[in-house]
Length: 103
Image 1 (cartoon, helix red, strand yellow):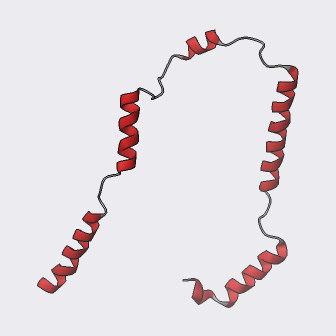
Image 2 (tube, rainbow, N blue to C red):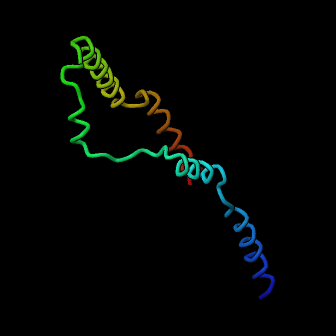
Image 3 (cartoon, rainbow, N blue to C red):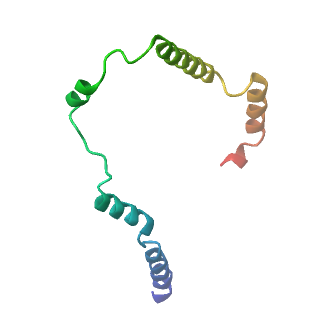
């Protein structure tokens, strides 16, 4: 019974070694709390009241619209197949030829 228990105890001790603290994260959290640099949640109504109407110019709107159209076009292009039909056929042949190696 003892020989079976020894590996378990050794693995448990080794696992405890990985449970150390994260000093870098703790330091950042401490600085944030002390320095008061954490973001504050505020009601949206106050932000809307501060917004200046008409700040977006026609050229800014056109730039944003063009960028959105470009991103939509890229997304549409990515929806297609990843591999060409020839590559897919070659991969299917390889899988069929070596089914035991995939397990």
